[in-house]
Length: 389
Image (cartoon, rainbow, N blue to C red; front, side, top):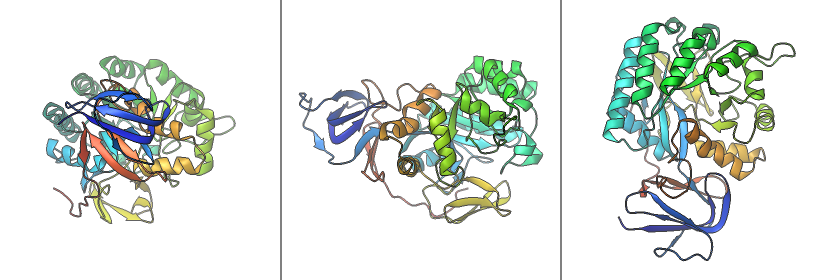
C-alpha cells in the first residue's frame, strides 16, 4: 500500500476541527501527518468533499454484534466477527463486553481476549467485564442469580487479565468490592468503572479515591438524584469521574442528557453504544443466557420490558447529540479521544503523527460514508442475518 492523502471539507483531529485540511497515511497504516490548507502534500490527494473526516470511533461497551453475543462459547474468531461488524458501523476500536456470568465463562472470555490480542484482531482494544460484582437491586438485564461480591480468586483473575490484555475495563458496584480490591485492580492497570449500584454519593467518592475512574451508562441502573440523597448519579455529575452515556433517546431523556452535558467538564463524558448481537444485522430476536431479547421500535428489551442494551450505533449517537445542539467537536471527542484516553489507547481516537490510520467519514447529517482501518478502506453495509454459534 502506497502513501495515501485524504482531503475533506472538515477534519477533526480528536480535539479541534480543521477546514479544508488533509491527512496523509503511511504504507504501514499509520498517520503521517495532518496538513493545513495550502501545505505541500506528500502525494496527490483524494478529495472526499463535504462532511467530516474524523478518527475511527472508539466504543468501550459492546455486548455483541453480527448476530454474536459475548458469553459462553466466545472465542477469538467470534471476537473478530464482532469487531468487524462494529468497524462497518464506524467503531474502529471496541471493548467486547461480557455481562454478569459464571466464573468459568469469565475465564473463557478472558482467554478468548488474550488470543484475539495475540492474533492482532483488527479493532480489538481489550475487554470490558460488566459484572458480576454488582448490586442485585440494580441488576437491569443482568441475571440476579449470578451477581455476587468479589472474592480473592476473582481479584487474582482480574488483576492477571488487566496486566495481560491491551485494556481491561471492569464495571462493579462499590458495595460488591472493597477499597483494597478496587485499589489492587487499578494498580494492575484495570479501568474500574462504577455501575449497577444503589450506593450513596460518599461511597461512590470513596471508591473513586481508591482508584475507580469511570461510571458506566450514566443514569441507568443507579438511583435517581434526590435533594438529600445524590447517590452515584450525583457523585458522577459533580466529581472528576468520567462517565459513559447512551445517547439513543431511550435510555436517557434529552433533558437529562442536557443536564449531564452542562454539569460535566468537556472531557467528562463519553459515548457508548451498549450494543447487542443485533448490531450490523436485521435480526429481531436473540437469546442471552436462555432469555429472549426482542428488538422493536429502536428498543431492545427482555420479555418483561426491561431494557437490554441499546439499538444504536455511535454515528447515530453523534446525530442525537447534534440534535441537542452539542458542538460537533465536543460530540466527536466523546466518541474518539475521550474513550481512547480512558483505556490508555493513546494511538487511537486522534489524528496525529504515528497514530493508527483508523478514520471515519461522516456526512453533514452524521450518516457514515466511509471507514478506514490501518489505512485500508472497510466495506460498509454488510448484513449478517443468522445467529452464529
